[in-house]
Image (cartoon, rainbow, N blue to C red):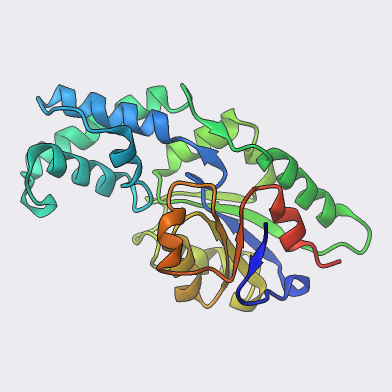
Length: 241
């Protein structure tokens, strides 16, 4: 079901920017496995998958820092810098190797991306560009998109280390606007958490929230302009007809 809180002028949109984890893909199991492999390597007990998944959205460094802190019963800012650097490097190496063990595109994602692409190519169709902006490091982000057949739909796939600042800072989204010539009013950010909604707001853009991802429970804290229950509803929500 599509819920509209603030109508988006979809006929004006030129830039569609998608989050990755919890929006295009379900990567929770591989992330959880890599976090727990890291915790075991550094003599910490494992954390429940649900707990780890709740840390996803603010970038891999914060994911690992929060997990280490909870496993060690200390505050995130009390983690020894040397320990964190070693643990984070181990996590990245493990995740790069295992990033596609269990990760998959959500049901309807590929069909929706194809439909949006075909809408662009149709005679008289809206001239739009699609891109990915995630807080995940860019190398695994691109590798996952390529491995799952998503990459060809996007002009750019940018990660949390593509810019000096991560979402919800608007730098990445504004950079995409500059590269594509889109204004904030012609841009929509599509994601599953308040990080994505706040990124859109900070850039002056529109937002579509996805209730099927990792962070839909916090969308009530920062409601999007439009909320969808499935990826299949993107096509309807973004169709200017």
